[in-house]
Length: 569
Image (spheres, rainbow, N blue to C red):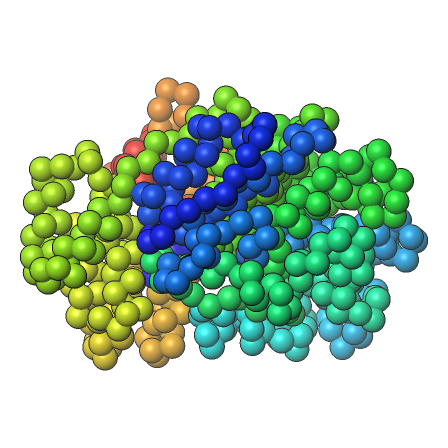
């Protein structure tokens, strides 16, 4: 499986930077260069606003093959940053009196759509825009025909069917649970209320007033000519066409356009226009949970009580935006790789934030060795280099995976298969190598071994929905585990894993939740009667009984660590 966060290789390097009085520190520029040079990202563009000064920095290329240097006008997918546009559009409607945050969603949806309720309470527009609707992250009837463009065939009929049949897991408005389908639904509700498409609303109310000519859902010819091609690992990938759920993540833009958007948000409280007043409303705190350590404005995440932040990612892109209105500073970082760039934005907003030093990936030198001398000598080279120069290169699990997908994209299936096999041998306790090996076996027509490896991946990481979906498509049913409420209750308690580190287990409406010290609470899902996994991170917990059958301890498995904990309450 090609993970959302992945390694990418660039072949041609160049950069552009504003010549005078740069506000972007040399440390940040060198870090960006190291990400590209060390094969993390293909191209990165930063737009930084500091008071009245705007600064840009660009490094890398629009494509691995035949690419040109990225710049402030290069077009990227901004993913979930689109949600802040949706919130602004809603705020415009609220300020004009056309809509109210407390309006139930049923007011705007067709009468044929049965909107979900819980304990007599309805979902409102405010619940959608603050991720407190109890709707899940993704609709359960999302079944893309093309995983490289997975939203293209999701229709309004699919959305209506999902909403009409959705069973809410917890009380509406009680906690934050990030929901793409909820925000996509809000974008569609704005369409229904206005009689215009989501793109038309964005252009008319945000893009045109701010002269953002390269900010659209559907690429114009000019945007196509400036497009930075998305990359999944080392392979160029398809753009994501998100229309039905466009309000959740469908917008494409450039750094120069996004800087205009950031500036408008920074000045929202001081400029007197409909748009600025709407942005100001969207910035106000609308939900806060001490238990989850979370605070939401309208779509914007509020961090440390003052930063407005939102990132985004699609199949071949990542993006990050952050604003400090009081300091009149803001940043946007765009990359045409699905490797997270949040650290760059955080460093610019919080100067004492430490950037992690990077090592060059082993995949670049290994690729050359394979092309020069063949796969067998390449594998020998890899093993010898890892044994003798382990500190010189990045040998993490995704390095071989990334290179394997590059060869797979070049139709060199035997080489890709050999690299995925090597990765499984090197990292036998990691789920992703087995998933990728399963995909390679499918590409080579060996369904039996593909199924075996997908099942092994799912065994290691029960949250691997990709493996689950592929096995389903191969008619290999995966039995869902059900644990009785009585059994769930037996796990409830407080477990001590370190002197000051505890995990508290609670249950609610037949679901089990985990909360670590000073961290949010997350639902955990059963893979066996006493084994559970998290979906937000790759981690598992196992509950253990004593010789009298009473649960007296648990074990946390995460990042290769095995952390036992005694039950203390």
